Image (cartoon, rainbow, N blue to C red; front, side):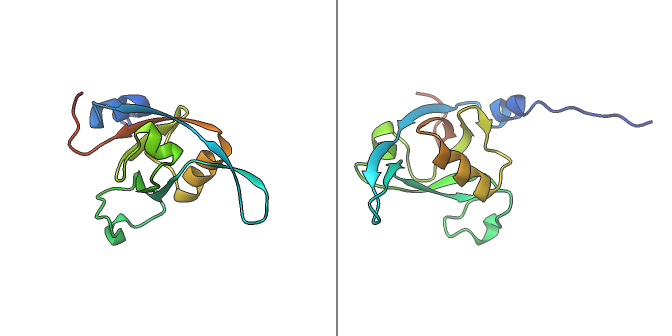
Length: 125
């Protein structure tokens, strides 16, 4: 007898991270070194299902996408995003099982980021 189990990702996110912090980040226009207009968000990420978290200098314990740097005064800092936040979703897209490259690509293409993050030690407000 074979039993097939369908897992609702949204249910898993809620179960594993019962308290999610919603963050809305509006990117700011800037000009790069070559004079092109770009949208800046002011944070860097690490992790992904294609990365070895055991080699992470931050000591992460899973394949999630984590904020590894937040630039002072940036849209990320102003929105409340913090270093070591785990990004669970970005604009409704599940970030719990995504490659690093896909996460970067998804973050870059959107001018507004509606994030759901988990923060170590935060269980309520």
